Image 1 (cartoon, rainbow, N blue to C red):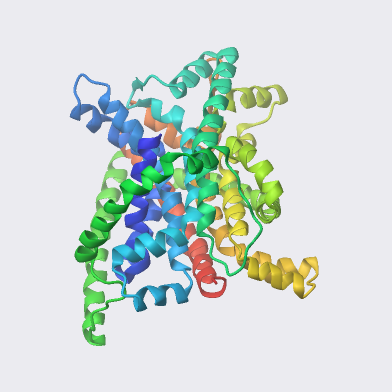
Image 2 (cartoon, helix red, strand yellow):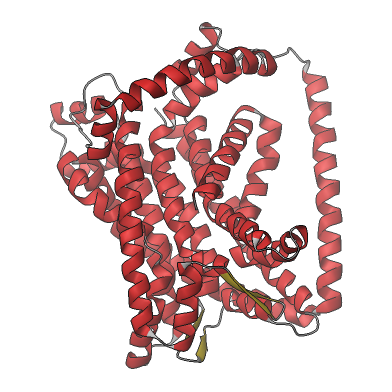
Length: 509
């Protein structure tokens, strides 16, 4: 989990800076991120398990690498979206100050970009880490092309216990995960979220005092001083080396309008040619292995899953936006509820699927409806945590101005709070939607006590063909993954991307 988190951070830094600072890179990277976010974890596993095993014959290291890669794919996209939006909505006066102070691109990233996006990045990293627990069973116990692979771990343990219907063993795993998640939050995430408060952008003291016993102990110990003593020469060397490599911030080369337009045209043609070739190859494989009739059937499955995702996003937004704002603005409530929410969000909800499935069976509730509940168990936290991060990052100046003007509650929500958290709500919505599509793979098919129950949807289709060894399973699996990508990318382009542009244009400080 922590190796995957480190890889996700490196990816996030490279992606966010490239997309925020280069118009051409942004035109390519954002659609690619949409596609990568829409590819389900099982899709990555089905492609990567065999090559990783071939790299390490006769060793479990190949399976370990495949599991880490799957965990990376469940963490990286949310973190990358978070930091990208922070850079895209960065206050202009800070960016101008970086140019006036003649900072190098490395110094701008290390001293401005990363600190200004630290609060949302930490909260979204915590949320992504919790989301990775959700896919632990899929990454530690996977069946690809009729072959089953398992790694020693609590995820594989739960998958085996649920398949055999041993609820007692599942409860032991749940208890174990509660202890593990609580320990990780107390020792790692709580100190990190409290430490990140030092990077708040405001002109007056907010009165928020996030506390962490572990952070207090570290600050009062010699560890903090020793760390600073070790990092000071490292930072100096990095400033010199990376400053020389990446150049100066804001140092734009003067290019004529005609030359820039011709370059953009060549770039667009190259991207279009690559995409056209990829689409042609995919269509050939799908039509040869699955047929045109199967495409129409899978489209209907995608529409069914899409309807569940829409219902989930609407309901969770209506519930968690007011709650998140109240928590983010109240330091005492935040101190009391944050550890509880962190544990709840980090807990792998699919560990509870066997118990919830038993309730569905007892109430004779169809998985077509129950699947929405199962998807919400793991994805609702994306919205809540982004709203909390957005509300807690509102500059205290705005809140004081609202109090001084005696705004009514309705006017304060309409003119101050909702505009201030709009970008965070969009980030939470797009990541929750992507997580819901991913979660549909484990929420639309439920194995309990030796029986498997299915919902009519694209997630069930992908899960079924991932485990199948029938002829043509590769074409059907590719069709399911491509159809999910089409739905997610189209939704992002038509709906979420426009909201992102609106947030950057009208609701940034």
